[in-house]
Amino acid sequence: MADNTFDQLQKVVARLIETVPFFKGLKPADLFAFLSKAKQTTYAAGQVVFSEGDVGGQTIYLIMRGSFDVRKQLSDGSVDVVDTLGMGQCFGEMALVDNQPRSASVAAKSEGLLLAFTGDFVATFPNISFRLYENLARIIAQRHLDIEKEIRMLALPVCEVQCFNEILKDMPPPAGIIGSRGLTALSQLGQPYTVAAKEFVVKENSMGQNMYIVLEGELEVSKVIEGEPTRVALLTRGNYFGETALVSEDFGRTANVIAIDDVKLVRLNAGHLQKAPELGALVYKELARIFSMRLRRSTKVFMQTFGKECHRDCPMRGE
Image (cartoon, rainbow, N blue to C red; front, side, top):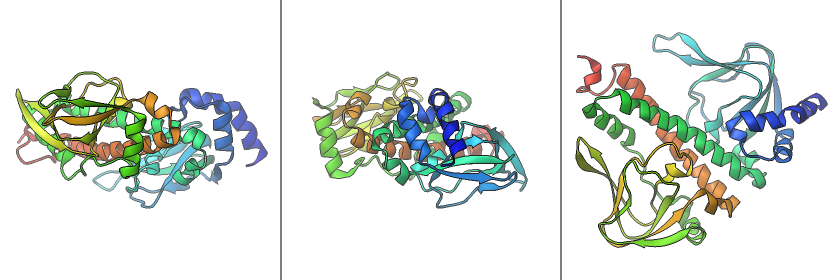
């Protein structure tokens, strides 16, 4: 790394921890060591970093100098600048956990300098990867929850049901987070306990800080829709639920979970994961991936609904 960038990092690393959510909670010395080894690239004004729809990009960027425009292509083919980012801001962070096409284009507005790092690069810093993936899961989950909140506020009840059915349609079921070995390790790390048949594990709208992994038995996930409980999913061994509570304390539980028969669970919170940071990093990375999928779905549904492109019977269409 060039000496001037090295000196610049020393001056701003504390501010990055305070102001950039992705770096929250890191020690200054650890973040400095991490960023000082990242790849740096200079961009001329107008030069494109990546384009909307690009695939295969698994790199996140930190702006060290200059400003960069975030651009979206509209339905009429025109391009709109939706944001302008400056020194100390990150972009492309979801690429660390999913392989989806880039959702926008980013180009240098002025001459600028970026630091770039990939998931493989993050993995070489086990002392901070836990915190980075925890922060990333929080960032993505909050974006998803904000959009879902908007849908609930704006949609009529019948539309809300169909909107959330669309978000969940064809979503992969909650599977074992990191395979059978990981399940065993998490079972030993967390707090095992049993729940009798027909008892609630969590109640819709209640608050909590734990997620749960099913060791034995079967549970029903349900939501109260227009006054009636409606089954959303069934959970068995290796499935997990309540994961949002690990990364957000601002929202209540979004569904009821009831034991169908006697079940054995393991209860996990952030404190448990901190005791095994390498395993915790894998858990938070997987959660960030799941929240990323939900964010893309909820964003699409929101745009379709209030862009009058929703399902045929949607009251929001005004037809």
